[in-house]
Image (cartoon, rainbow, N blue to C red; front, top):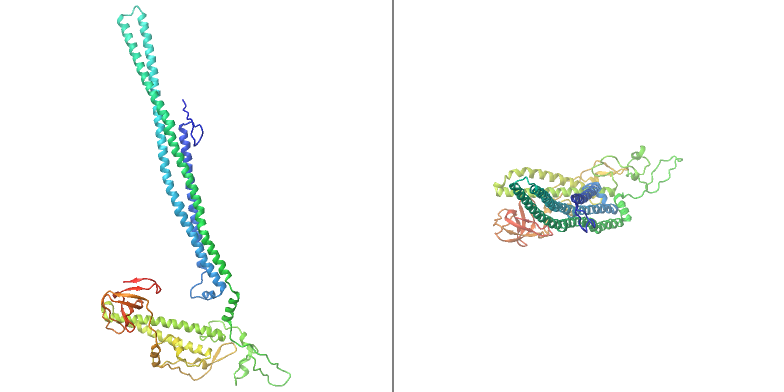
Length: 566
């Protein structure tokens, strides 16, 4: 027996609903979920490519960044190198946009679709469960109908046989009356049972037809409609995800365009004239061009002479034998530089190059001196704290470090004075250093008298650009200690970098400290450098140090960030 359904607008105009149709639908919807999961996997792999690409771009940019405190860093004064540095920085931002693409695709597509797939699986499972349940119910009703029908058929046959037997007994004259009556009653009973089976079969048939109508016109269409809507939502969702996939890329295109515009702008900013001028400034020697070489007439029996305009650079009274050998006749500005580290005073370099090297060395020594002085000041403050509060530490433990710093300072000062003497020689200044020169050398502390060799008077130039030592009397540069104290008489007060509020009362009894009262508001002129002390000012005439733990500090935004220390 087959059952036909009139129409279903989803699959076919006419659909024969059999059990295998549920199987087909189940396979199709599972295929749809597989397609969705495949797309999720595709997007996930795309995000991994984006994040790996961004990582490689960042590593590439970092690889070609100039190393700090290296020769490579000096090369970036040229406009072409600055443009390359700007390109590296823009590539870093470019990589950041690929990271944004990866993050947005992960959050807006992968995560959302993964959650939707789980919901879809649960909904699909529920719909097919309802379909299987409805299918089983109609099959049960059909079995009940078949059973009622067979019973009705059997009872009818039994009633027919009982009637025939009664008629046969009634026609037989040899059968007793009691047997005929018994046969009649049996026939009546079978007829009654047949009527009851007929009524039950009729009732079961009506009930089955009603269930079948509901099944094929209400329950199954509703279930299939829900499955259809579920499948259409899946299709719409994957389409929206594909739009998001494109939109995520489109959102970063303007920023990527700006990165590329900046690279183009950096390339256009390259100034070949400026770079050439930098090369000239970096490598100019400071030498005067050589004069004409005089004609030497070997046909005349006269002593060979050398023109004063040549670059032999001989001193009066020096024999010509200094230029004998392989170096004879060479113009010394064009002689190759000595290989190796060279002399300490850079005397092997041309004057302009030597001046730059000496200036760099002096600046480096001044920075080292200032660093040592800062460490010494911090340790001195720490020692004062330990003396006042012995429970915080042993003051004697700081003395060894202070002594070591004092030795280092002395060595650095002598070294700086030596290089300043050489620098003064190159710049054509007097051998004795003036007051501004002393200030430039790092603001040394008062000392009795410092002596430095005047190297400018002890050396003379040689043809290869170096200097030769000659015995001469040492000249001393004396720096009176009294002059040092006058250097800071007109020193301007330190600017205010923030405010503070006293949390506790502090009695400043030691030199350099200042007393404060609890709740008092003061100005900060120097923050804690790690020694536990903060320098504050009450007014123009009152300033000093207080323990950092005694105040609540509020630094201004333009002074090392808006940080609060308590």
